[in-house]
Image (cartoon, rainbow, N blue to C red):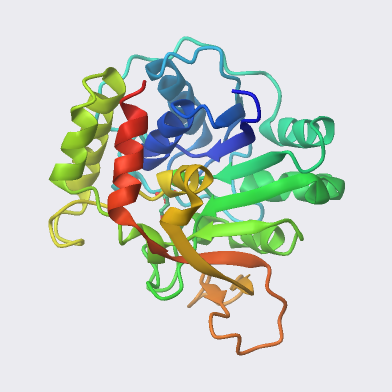
Length: 313
Ligand code: BDR
Ligand code: CA
């Protein structure tokens, strides 16, 4: 679509990453230039493969998928197989992908795209640990001013943590990368647990995906059913959050979300609170605002949008 917003999806699929990628493919307002895989929920060999399997599910064998960093910038990888299963995409029975993995490293591709596309025209949609993006920024600081926006799923403030008492998974896995990204000077929008925990995939909402009557809708209902089994009680037994599609929904309908432009920092040192994101919500410090930190979501509107998009695939 002419005038479509150009995005790079940086991701560690992941069931909720899969829904986000499918929703992006179904949206003509978005022009997905590349998918860059990062280690996170599971190892890189799984996440890049899962990314390709999702492309094939959506009939997008033309999409370019690149593998990036296989571990956090300064720490060993901590995976989330207890949530996403051994492959990261347990649930649906997707055939092994046959489309190729591109030979270039994802970090090189992020740098190259940002340097060759017009400045301010490419948005980074980050659905996993921020390792690839921070590495690209470290290697090529000139790209920071060329980024239209970094919209990432990660962090928590009022909601505290999902992997430690105070840390959200994507930030906890690579807090050093998050710190570098938060400080890079680009426009940043955060979709924290404060938002995602208020939009649960209830059976009714999942059945709307199924009603699409296409392979993507069927796969999503199996993906969410798998996730539901991992955490039956935690969210009151009525479904699990679908975190990562918030990033895509924000790009399509920003008014589904509300937040504040505040200072956002991350704890990288303390063993007790490592990966905790600190949002200066009440402007208690003179630290400069650097991110729009979302706090509210129109959950009905969010699921309506996702179901409507998935039905197009
Ligand atoms: C985030 O962690 C991952 O497990 C999900 O894919 C999501 O990106 C939620 O904390
Ligand atoms: Ca993810």
